[in-house]
Length: 230
Image (cartoon, rainbow, N blue to C red; front, side, top):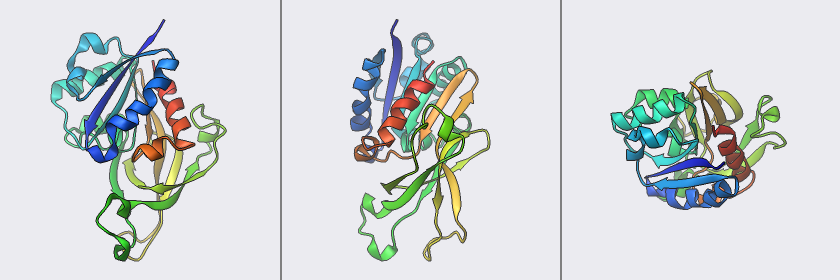
């Protein structure tokens, strides 16, 4: 029997919501999902359809959500619908809704930039080299098992979070002369969260297509979607 995956995408085009979600549609179909793609959040208010959804994949950055739409999404997750996403598409989606932030468990706060003298006014001003460290817990979790620490050159998310997250990987913001902070800060990079009967998976790495299609990020996202699904 097939499962139902709902892909909700939109928001800031810089995160390539169409291109990144299109990358994973064949994988979902190969793993037994029927897929429905929506270019906005209105579908969340359709309780009858949401009751059929096993997995929501959301890439919808810096957007807003209407209260009935959020309540529909929340209801579905509490009843067992899984939710997965990456980068700002899930961790910087609806700043207007505190209950959404509570459910997801992590909110984008900052990404460190290059030395101000090297910035040119493009997205690349925030592409810096950093390491994603797999946690002790992450080394045994099905999403990240067998994956070693890995390096990226992309946006490094500083995430505000809480101890309810099951953190599979972390990243540490270093101290540099031009930044406001004065000691290293470690934040979750990959985490899961149980919310009611639903499972949530978040990968902070995933800024653009070239990041989500690179290894091991792609494998982590693929495993994360399957893990989160009802």
